[in-house]
Amino acid sequence: MKLYNTLSRTIEEFEPLNPPLVRMYTCGPTVYDYTHIGHLRKYIGDDILRRTLEMNGYEVKHVMNITDVGHLTSDQDAGEDKLEKGAKKFGKTPLEVARFFEEDFFKSIDAVNIKRPVIVARATEHISQQIELIKFLEEKGFTYRTKQAVYFDVSRFPNYTKLSKQELSEKLVGARNEVVVDREKKNPQDFALWFFTTGRFKDHVLRWPSPFTEGFPGWHIECSAMSMHYLGLTLDIHTGGVDHINAHHTNEIAQSEAATGKTFSRFWVHHAFLSVEETKMSKSLGNIYTLKDIRDRGFSPLAFRYLTFQTHYRSEMNFTWSALEAAQKALEKIYEIAADFPAPRIGCAEFEGDFEDALNQDLNVPRAISVMWSLSRSNYPDYAKAESLYKMDEVLGLKIRENAKIIKNIPQTILDMAKDRDKLRKMRKFNAADKIRVDIEKKGYVVEDTDKGTKILRKI
Image (cartoon, rainbow, N blue to C red; front, side):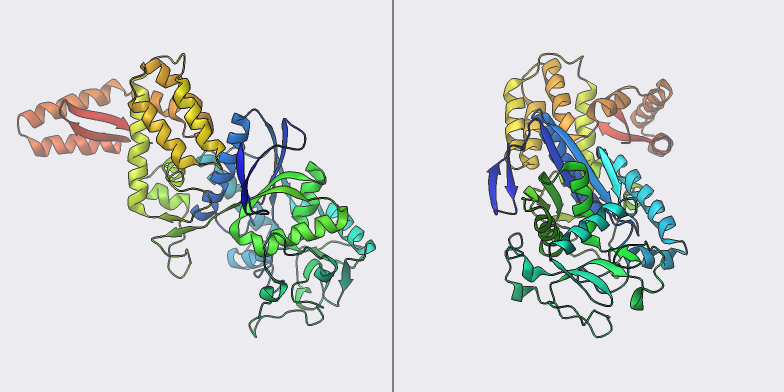
């Protein structure tokens, strides 16, 4: 199995440190607002990675964090805590906001059939681990204090930019005049490990006692503390979005390796962005879509999952409603094909091998999908196609077997309505026939006109 490693900027052969165990950490959501399709694209990509590892016989210990404190509106330690901001917006306490949107997140990933992590770690429930890591960094001389926070001194860590490949001079960030920043920072790139609940954070609701003074952790420290707590000092794989490379993941590496003297993660897997109609998602443009928006337009969440498979995870994906419509039709077609399959047995080794090879070449899901369609059109017996298709779907996660059964089991009353519609159409009573079409569709079915008459499918 080969994966692109952001650390080396090359595709490398993947082998875990202690096979068959794979220690995998994925950056989870900051739970202050609704989960949108850009988030879901990344988590579907993580899910495909995990399922591909399992396809190869590995046991994946998958840990994901929930950021419910400490993530400021700027990655450069400026602005306010996103949870505090969400609390003001929705008229709730920060933890009420966190739990509400955490539930929305898990409902969203369940809807697109993403496997839940083995361990979900909330930042607020691992404060002691974060404090211990900061104390250790202090003892080793990697930190300093100002009136506002404890900072990591990047000048003490020579390989600070080994992930981003940037020069430190390129990372200088000019803050807007209205954003309050800590003027006592030694270097612009230094990042906060612990904020004090004084000054600009004197009204911060979430706060804990610590050896440094009462306060709350910075965003970056949680991932290092929790991942090493559950997975050990060196991870096999760490994933996230491409926006995490230059700051969040760079800072994770610095603080973790400064503390342990060991490689923090051997592989770094980063997912590209999703745009909408060739435009960046933004609230001002009103193009930030959630699964509710997808459902409200009559589409299945699994159609969105299928749509993400058209673009390689390292390439930017462009979302359009027409593309989603095409994805839904393709998904309905594969369900329809599978609905006619007999009991599966004796798969098609040739196609299974091509499918696995595609996924093992840096998760080439577009090619894997192409193999799946080639299988469906092949001359192999249907029972063999069924065996291989369902095996492929263990990775794709499209629920083909389940939805094929639903499509196949159309109630007799609906089938009778379809026959009545065909009779009316033959009599050229099209208005009456259209009324039956509407009635059928209201009951949750799709009506298709074919050469052999009306065809009924369940909506997915």
